[in-house]
Length: 387
Image 1 (cartoon, rainbow, N blue to C red):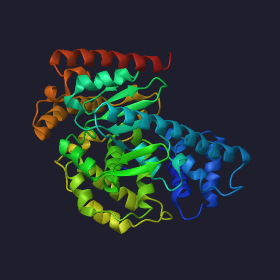
Image 2: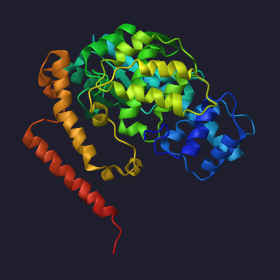
Image 3: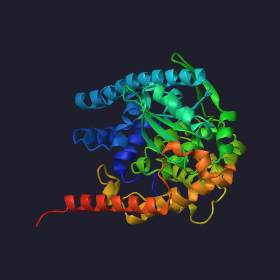
Image 4: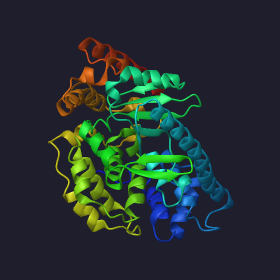
């Protein structure tokens, strides 16, 4: 069964969600949080919820040690987010001056800027931004980022991750995600985006409907974020504010995803599994889910991987073989075909060899499979208990 709580401790997860979003913090939830902090038992995703809790924490609700830790996370997040926004604005200005156009800031920046508890309530690991059309100007784009002193950390079919000189990461997208490879989706997000004024400058972020859809699909299908359900915090932070959602805009945007089922399932999970003390319009959420189209049979399970014990940090070598096979099937065959089908251009001329996406040839794939097989086997032997 798909759970709202991933593989995290459901008791701690429920307590944290209620402390973040319930009308009034409950004594039992504070006691659960106190025990988890004293035992140092919070997962990474649960640590990311502490800044939100800090803004709603009653005086004396926790021991001095636990309270200082919770309130300290808000201060740390606030200072770091100011730095990230400063670097993001500098990059935006440089992109405009270089003629590469305006960018749309996704996920972390958009959620931090619209959080009702302030900039420090939503941590950001990196900065995700959408810069449409750069896949057709790959050499120019690579030269631009090199001139900024950035080094390339990784590349995929839809984005490149850059590391700035001061060690901040920028994930620069030309498509939204591997499950959203249509140029029309990018164009639609640009057309409906809104501008937020901030002391650091102007930031273009997605409209609430597109932002919610992106968070839900990304949260349920990306292995790095769903195992402790950290995406739920972003989704609930939107829903508890009871925004007036444009149903047609939301559903039309989701209909172009390869996995619209992820959005429908995530909405149903939120309505049915969220603690009853968290107040939002559950019936409206269920109606929104009912209007999302069903994807092709099997597409959701091609992207979704049920959480398991291998989701603990350092256990990636223990992922099932079917996970690695599904990843290769998507990245080598299905997603390049989607780019060609949806956007009317061949894969290689669309992305460009200079992007350094892993080659799709049979010989290269064989070498990749052999290297990674040896790596997994070595990791398993290293963790095997001795005689």
